[in-house]
Length: 94
Image (cartoon, rainbow, N blue to C red; front, side, top):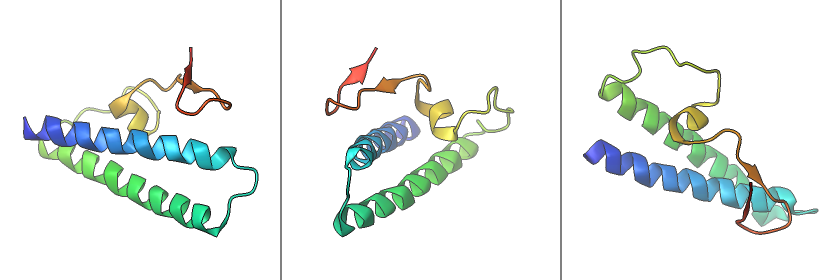
């Protein structure tokens, strides 16, 4: 149960990072603070992915070869085919 809770919390944090990174990418001219925040989010994203891989290996779930060549976050957490609108904040396109 603790692994499931940790995975959920980290998944939510990855989703938040993705949301803010999408907002950053939409800016025509990001300022220095935006750049710094973006770089910090990318470092945190890598830490989260490493933690999740460690959690999975601790529970013996990385013994199997991945069935796809998707990024680890997409394999672990969701639909790689999701599309985001560039106009609306936080809305998904179907």
